[in-house]
Image (tube, rainbow, N blue to C red; front, side, top):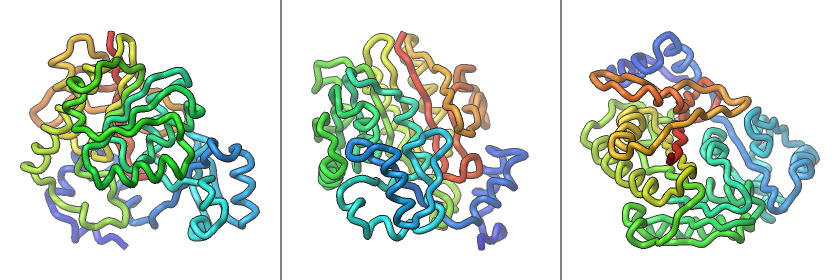
Length: 312
């Protein structure tokens, strides 16, 4: 059981400011057991058959309200990796909130898609699934050791419409003479949304580390936007709840690209909060309210931030 009195004062003060009246609900949620999720890989098995197969294994699964192929495993999650079905790639373990950015991206079968920070491939394989293995995905990552896991997971899930690229995402506008219909920038971050059962994250934010991550995030987002087609869609996401990695980064893009527009992110069945329009001494563009802040107590998942951006 989480002892609130053992948490750093700076952590409590920051999240109290972010959550306001919902702070107690937020803290209470963090005391609950960790949740388990899988995605039915419809590249290999129809959704209904995948659900039925879990039931036959006496695994209790509940579809996520906002994404039917995503399942919350209520009982028997440890049986899945031992099954033949899992070995065949019918199921992929993926955290429930992690499935939201590809939903916001809304890729279509004929699209050219860039996943700028793709490894280990959870969102890449979900995008391939949503595209029905049609169109083309360029899955990029700058870390060689992570490329290995990306390639494994693409093969495991049967994603055959994907090309793997090993580049620093900030250099891609100089490397690629392409314009993309859809771009996902799921940026490296402090992972401050991964709170439940992970006590090392219960710490005061390190300003120096946040500013270092923010510089990387700003560079990636600007590079992604430069590669976006007119009227194309870019999704920026992090598993962080810190405004320095989210609203600050989006505001930086808006300041540098007047043609960038934040658009509403209406996902049926998903409980979320609007992006911040002010934080501490910072005032943000009113469009920031279109961003999504997904807190752990909203859907009983990890925390996430998602912004959907169009190029006018």
